[in-house]
Image (tube, rainbow, N blue to C red; front, side, top):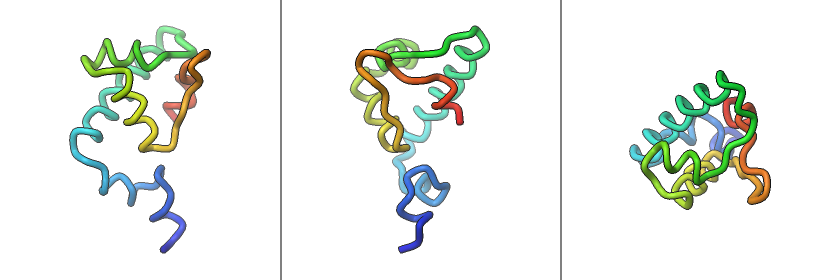
Length: 83
């Protein structure tokens, strides 16, 4: 197994993600870009969920697939999610 195949942020991992997850991640990225442009620094899963018409739990699961986790008290770093 190569390093890239075990790395959840590598492009080779993306091909193994279910299509609905990929679509939601693309939507989150668009929403996060809009938030960043408005000066938003942190976002909670329930905020993204409301904009995407998903559940907060679904948002958290989706973000965990790309090895990104937030803090219940602080949420997610918008700039960090966009990297």
